[in-house]
Length: 264
Image 1 (tube, rainbow, N blue to C red):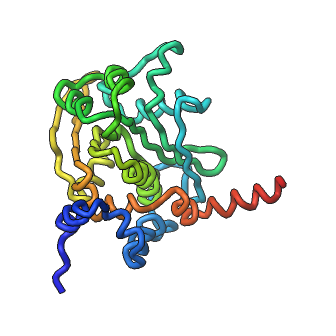
Image 2: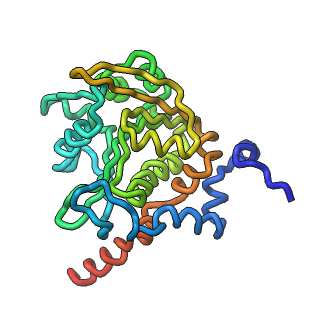
């Protein structure tokens, strides 16, 4: 039997007002492949973090209302080293950051071993940033009063492949669950993320070179519409992992239940 490609399947199911995430979330074999991206030989994976050795970790998604938000945001911007992501708002201007979200992975003693930084925005803002290299502050302010139909990922990183995949599943699942979201854009200068996106067979839409402090910064853009995301097997596998499923795979849900019972 000839099985249509994911791209053809995505177009077919759209005709029936359905999506591949709904279909493959019920496919046991696909779910197993999806789970493997989180659980694959985690104890043998090389860590790029000097103090993390594949210990247990948990992931939280925070926004401006979290006390850690601004500190973690500055850490991420420093990690990226992308001059177009510079932002220095005063406390009075922090309200414009309310659509900016951070997923942060923490291990023993609260050490940060992974993160992502993403913004809910719209297609026109994405096109503006790719065409004019606007700074992050301007991009965020342009997103405040617009209806959101797009997600812009500025940073996505993890100490190991497992942590990377776990972090990615957070915003990809959120994107898939929000039916109004039609476009996904990665905007990054991080070599590790670029290699991961290339391995997932994503094509660079635009490559910009910026000189910053006598260093050459290569910024790459990857733009996908909703159907293209569904048609990418790697991204689809991560998109069907709900926060509940991720917690089960990482073992954090069980611990939270034990803590609740203990507190009770």
